[in-house]
Image (cartoon, rainbow, N blue to C red):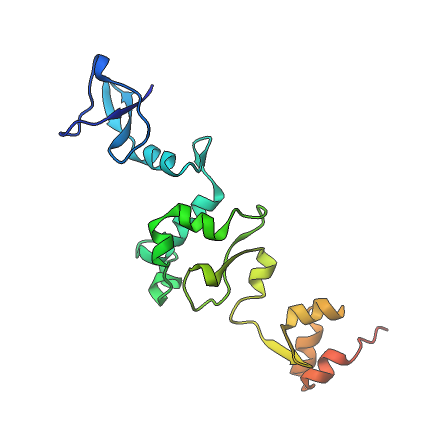
Length: 191
């Protein structure tokens, strides 16, 4: 049985007729009866504060926000070394409020989208983040080799897709010593 109630000064809960339902406020908490005693359920209370706990589960946007903060601030997080450990931060506006994060980023367009930093060496802030698909994110990694032809710069995968080449055609040509221009403009000869 879940009861919404204010805790007393000593942290205990009122009994009998003193129990009452309340709205979620800063001093409100959630309790549940287990083994004849009331226990705190602060995790449940935190889900109710922002309104993004559909069916008792966090929305994908809320999970993205919480995981982003953990990656950048918690040395115990398994991905901390790749984020907070190398100086990637979350802006104060987003760290302070999920609602502000959501108002800046909006809802995820599809389940295939996740948060992406345009510049992988800069932190999470409105001007550097977007929702992107895995393919869009793979085109945005530092290890991609960028090629420029006639003032247009793309990575090799993007050029291959654009020109109708196989994924290995351009890298193979460059390894054989072809120029960027020849690698991108010479049609593929099929036997």
